[in-house]
Length: 226
Figure 1 (cartoon, rainbow, N blue to C red):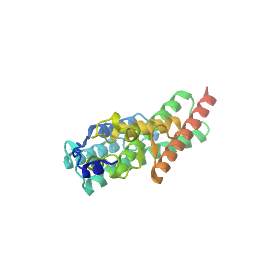
Figure 2: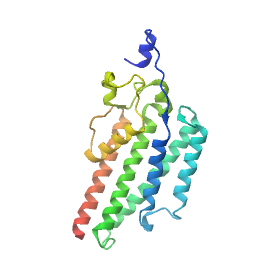
Figure 3: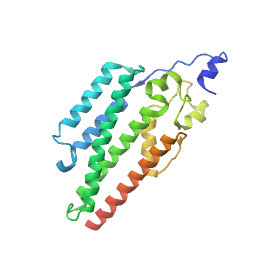
Figure 4: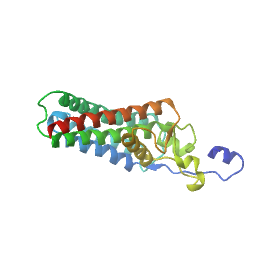
């Protein structure tokens, strides 16, 4: 039974607070910082442009919705989408360059740099999918805060089927999607969270495929270099 249904039958209305901005902001900034640890051939040039743009996007989001995420405005959703799309595009470029380097003889002399680059791209990929899942599920963070976890979800978390174990105000927040993304990247499939919408299922398939492909290519080439 949804929160709205409980309210309509005379139950005490559920008042949820918006989630804090800092978890997703840290994830976005971490993606930008990790990118700076890549060799120059794998980074966006000039190297300061990418993190600067990330900071500008985050400043706009904080200014437009200070404090908790509870304002459902179109320009805020668009800005959030552009931020995540930027992180995605930059990491896709780095991943393509990594794969090209693996397939090109003589690009790597030792296994260490190859494993480091692969790990960075893989970690940013986890953060990227966590951000996408967080932004798209249930209409976004502000909508989930207003309507609850069971309003048009794309993912069913364990807490949603075990409501007695969590407060009535519970709804999935960024850390929940980070765990979902990490588990998808490491287990190569669903674990305790079920995808119930097609785009969510496709997203998990894509993340698993990327993670598996990167691991196979990087490890295989690293073994050859040992």
